[in-house]
Image (cartoon, rainbow, N blue to C red):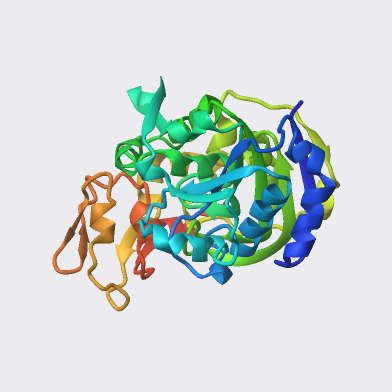
Length: 364
């Protein structure tokens, strides 16, 4: 049975987080026995301080890891951040510098090898780490956030971090947001191991996520055995209309049981600029206007030269090969696929999403 547990936690206090985990121990550890090997996948998008709410908070990650170690499990933890940094940085970002335990291994998924699992949207192959075939359960630790491309980035989108970086460039060429979301769902459905989601929603992000949105207190933890369902609960907590979110426009449904009064957690959050015009469009005159001018309404990436250090990260991560340094980033609008990776991965926040004049006259 698909289940979602929603609990209130007001601060990053490891004892409070562990209290929630211990109260739901049977659900979280179902089917495991002592010395079983498990894999933990946090959101390590980029090297950012915890207060920016870009990544799974290190105290949250440490609380989950210590909970698993205290239950005599062998824990592997790792990720493949979009903005790569050395393995030596992982303990600090994960909050594990002071956790010394022979049953804990911090790994870089990029060197573990990959295995094809199926063919997905637009004939893009899915390759995921071989390590997933060696563990009994995977713990997905996403951050509760918005996303300029997919509207939200929660449990399902966090699995994109399992895909080799090279493959991501091709996948981001998928032009349709629903097709891209279908690809994300396919990753979740292709996992060879049971998945438990423990979502960090104590402080989330609203607005132009996943990197440069605004932190917002959501005071919640979601625990579920289904990524899609966890994302539904997350979207409701953030006050979004799920009909506007590409992931929930797919021909895929999940019926789940909620443990917790979700109405008490709802806190309306700001949408990304890219969704100021509803993706389900609106009605009447605005709907017609949107249909005619949607290519001119979508925000576009641009550069703030006062912040730009000309590092070239945006150009190297551009799936459409639409950015050249001269000496600052120049955008070929005909090649740009509006994946917004340049905005997401710019280390200085110099690439921002600019609303074009016509979009400012249209409201949902």
